[in-house]
Image (cartoon, rainbow, N blue to C red; front, side, top):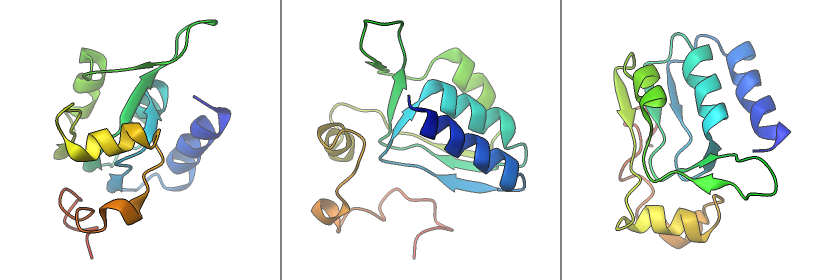
Length: 124
């Protein structure tokens, strides 16, 4: 997790408090940042974290850990949402691509797939 991630999440909470739909799919997202978004965006109705690398920071010198599934603390916070999209499957091609691209999806590699699991109101 970088200070930028926390700053970005805090900026969303501060400057877009009425945000109702958010998609951050196919990115690296630390658990603390996800908590900031879920707790801070009170009017959020839809969150798409499909194919994200959800990371947990461990004390140095341990490297960050990629979570295989969401824990109860996150599931409890997301339960208030109308829609919560997630996919963290090892067999999913998009999850594999996100992991191979280290959380920086190269969209040109999957131009035909990018709309498949996007929030309908955001898909063009």
